[in-house]
Amino acid sequence: MMLLMPIAYFSHPSLLYHTETEEKLISIIRNGLKADKVINPYDFKGKKKEALGQFLRDSDMVVGLSIYEKYPYIVWSDLEYGASLEKEIYTINFPSDRESTFVLRSGFYDEFPRLSLEETDILYSKIMKDDSKGLLSRLFFGRLGRKTIF
Image (cartoon, rainbow, N blue to C red; front, side):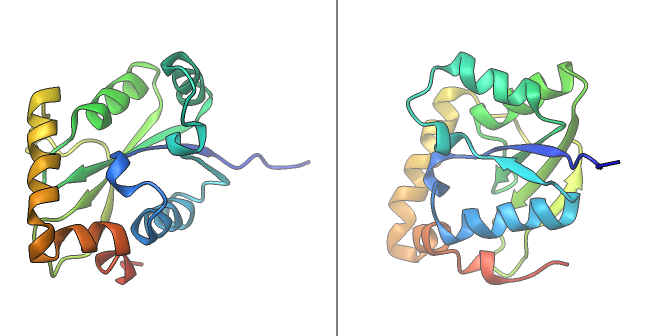
């Protein structure tokens, strides 16, 4: 008898699409949750939102990435939708403390705010402006992502 491995849907900001950090996070999901397949929304860029919703419905779990102890709008929306479908919910936090590592945990961080679309845009703008301080390079080139937590 063949055992079916779980499928994880990974909800995260587009700022991380196809970066070393994204690869590290997918590895954390695969290893930490024993996920056989990780659905990355970027791989389906150009698809209608309904198609992404189907991928989310077909998954066994939904993993969302919080940024600086905040949930961007799309991430918490996907996590709540997954919870409404009785999927297992997990969060990985991209910490504001530059020395911390990624932490994968079950459920939501109740203490993290859930940002509106406007607040999410402000957060992303701040990240882009902080590029001169090395923040964007942490996101794009994954310096934080090279640290291991397992």
